[in-house]
Image (tube, rainbow, N blue to C red; front, side, top):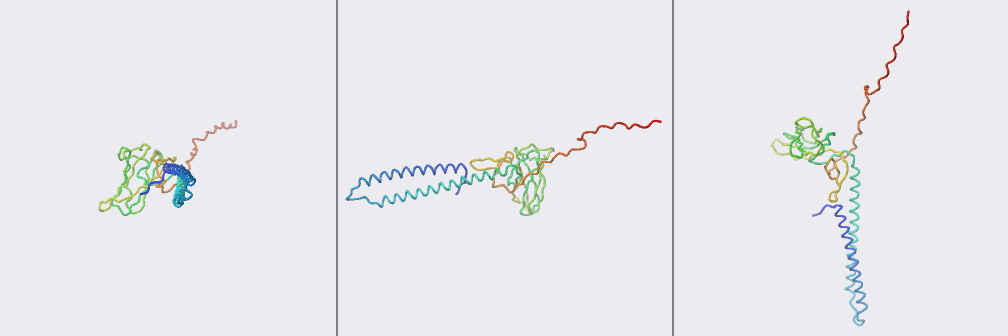
Length: 248
């Protein structure tokens, strides 16, 4: 079983590798000291066998190579995580589509919800639920096989519009045998920043933190509409004086 590579994990691994390197250096220095002492005090008529300390030197060398390899892997992981942060920063200010069962409504921009059905449904309904679990909007949606889109402008089924915030969304689709048809929803939102959680990089959309692996596409938002001056905005020209008429 493999674990996720995170920034905190990379830092801990780098610290562990550094500690292992320091310990190896200390042990090797002690080994050389003992070896030198043994060579200086050995019996010339019965010299010590060199094969044992040769094997120990080889073992030290193998451990050192492994630590060096771990250090290089740690450096590569740290570089990859830094690249992830750079990639995430590139999404800031963009409108993205991402796989999620939750959406953010900012109070102004409509939210597009996409879904796909693997077969025709007898009925299909989209439900939007607030944080209290209450359904704030429901509507029938296309039931045919394939991908579909639904645009929600934040309207409340009881009238008016909902408050800005995070809402759950789901599409309940059932076939002719009243069996649920699996589907995944893709929603849209604008990225306002990035955040790290436990070393992983996320995009901030409203109050939600969205993983980079859930992003489907990203587009540049359209420029804001400029207000066009109307005739009522233009200054009223002065009234010209009356034209004099000739007398008899």
